Length: 257
Image 1 (tube, rainbow, N blue to C red):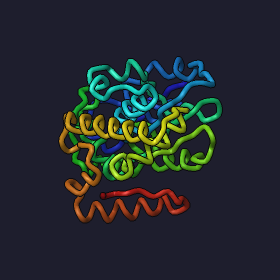
Image 2 (image 1 turned 90 degrees about the vertical axis):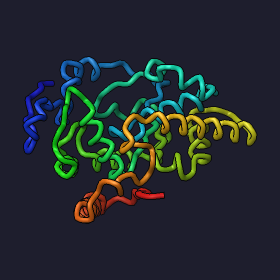
Image 3 (image 1 turned 90 degrees about the horizontal axis):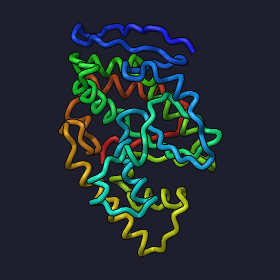
Image 4 (image 1 turned 45 degrees about the vertical axis):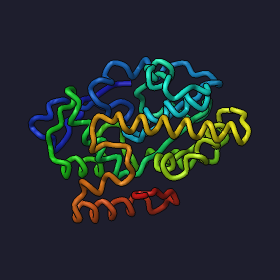
């Protein structure tokens, strides 16, 4: 598939990197030259894929899934490179037909705050615009990996498929026990009530460790961090846009706990 340069409108002067398009999806520079190989990547029916939109708690979910599937010690996981155990592939969408998918969605207000700080921290992106500008780009699908709204709704429509487990980031802090139980069932991990309680406690310990090690305080694990950043006007604009884009969906999120 051919790639084409895609300049990004309203990009700050300091933001010198250019996105490129692959298969109709805007992608960041470090994905360039890799898409053809990834699109031809051989899938196995036994594969289990963790799929998220960026900044939806991907790394945290990786570690929780590894702990649940392997019965690992949370302290040991903290010492390992989780990407070596669960490799990451940057691709717009792996498909739903021949693989098991654990999908996690995060409320878009917290997500866009985390995404903004992430862009500012990367040398390859070096974003120096305002958060207001960045948030407008998010709402207008001018960031990498396409529309968040389309991404989450497409997977939500498959939530009842036998090979899909749809999770919400906020439930790790609101109802971890139920999430871990669903994960164990999906992964085929058999455990009695006592074993499940130990598993939940280990996952809780792991989540606390990950959140305490968060490098960017504004992008912390806390649900509701958007309230520290959004102005009243921005929040009203975002809410109106959110209602417009999600009007046909019954998917809902906890924006605060």
